[in-house]
Length: 400
Image 1 (cartoon, rainbow, N blue to C red):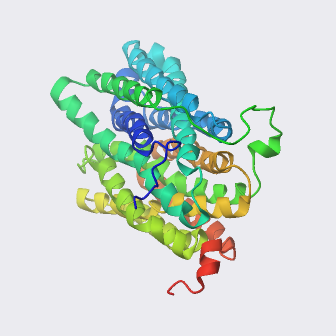
Image 2 (tube, rainbow, N blue to C red):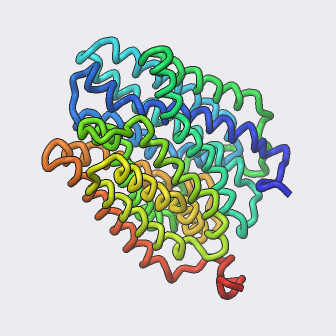
């Protein structure tokens, strides 16, 4: 039997590829922005951090709404619009770069559009995939489908480096647009979602947009995400300005560590429970960020980056498991959308805050502070440790 049972209402391969291509685009922009912003807009770490982080303001606001609409049986238009908005954001960033300092406002607006598109793309596709999945398999399905996003984030920087070396820096932006359009085409070619749920989309009470049980796990996820946001905003710039080397592969190294942990760790979430899995991996994330903060060579910096990726890899499926257990009968899209919005808020905060720390006390302080924030997420995971998943409870001892 496949990881996800194939059914007409869940076109797994197409949705996986649609999200993959959309996040190829986002990953590519994360690679090029640290050089693009200083070269075209004469900005420093603060503007780089703001440009990277501001996209996640839009994702935080969009995810709960996109998830609720997808829960109502309208996932296909949500995902399609997501791919098109991401493409529009890519075009806007390229055009802004042609305007020099006068294009800073357009750059930030384009990043917001891209962020909203990415949120709609993933948060619309996930409820479509999760429809009908039994509770005993939610952690692994959420984790494995999330690989679509992370394979894109891993491959995007590699593609950006290759395009830059072969065709020049501007070719990356055309690659971004083409990847997003392909994502939208894949969704538009997919049969309409069939759902037994109410598709009337009546006006939502605020409690439907913020389901019970999502906030506390989400807060822990957001604090964990701060470390990833710091890596996105500063790692390439840190390695380049510190003359350590490895800036062309650093984000890919992080993503490989993340993907390995996600692939092998997701089934463990269903076995042991989300809260039990979250605590040890958060310690690993904090340790990795500490290694990056103290690194004086490329080897040590990349080792710390890989360790941080290993730590963060299981956080998302662990938090999904905790959220759905606490949310009870609330819709998957709305609950997970709200929870994931905290991830976006963590990334949003990390951009400007880490940029200010890098411009002031320095890059090492910025990465060290991110490690401390990860320990805050650890405290929340420990506080939730008494909440056992239904699977863990029914299975008895973890080793059974």
